[in-house]
Amino acid sequence: MDFVILSGLSGAGKTTAQHALEDMGYFTIDNLPPCLWSALIENSKTIKLKKIAIIIDIRAQLFLSDFDNALINLKSLGIKPKILFLNAIDTVLIQRYNLTRRTHPIGQSSLTHDLASERGLLEPIRSKADLIIDSSRTSASELKEIIWNRLSEKPKFNLHLRSFGFKRGVPIDVDIVLDVRSMPNPYYDPKLRSKAGTQADVQAYIFTPNSLEFYTKLREFVRELILAAQDSGRANYNLAIGCTGGQHRSVAVVEKLAIDLADSFKPKIIHRDLQKSLAEHQKSA
Image (cartoon, rainbow, N blue to C red):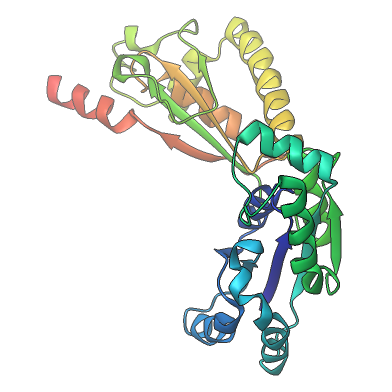
């Protein structure tokens, strides 16, 4: 089992780091008291959890004294955790607090005093860390990259290609929507009207020499978008291609994109409106 303990100062980027771990497939738990870690391990065996990450910080102040014993118990169970600790200089942490207007978890005195107290209370964890990351000058994407590289594993990049029909509404849960209604429409050919964009004769009708030129430009634009998203640290990217009904042109373009992009990605195809459109044609026939 891969077991990661993530700790650090408030405002140093633990939420970003947690998301990075989740993108890598870790089951994350925020501030589970150390005295319960062994029980978590035992219960995880029955459901075959392979990756667990515990976030422990000053919010669990009352339980921090159990940290050393928890490490001993983990060792007795054959678990060797990786401990990551996020740090940052006070001026940066204060600036971040001023932006979020949040109250420090200690909240006993000035923010400077509370940060000093926090550093002292978390020192037993920091001193045992396998990796200490100073996030003072690190962006969210850079922090994720550091964690992925340290754990020698980048998350799988998920690319979803979705066809849809504008007449049924534009999807709102995607990153970008592209319109291919300018391409030849098989709807106006009676022999093709009831067929799907997955079929060869429909695709031949759509991809004429002129429309292939348009498609080639669209494909390269899409490739650049996806690469930029991947390079920025994104784990998922959703692209929607729309035509009028979601039966012919958008389906054909998505199918062709999936083939053409397979050299770099493993796209997942979703034809949102295809079955609805085919069913309508069957009823009207």
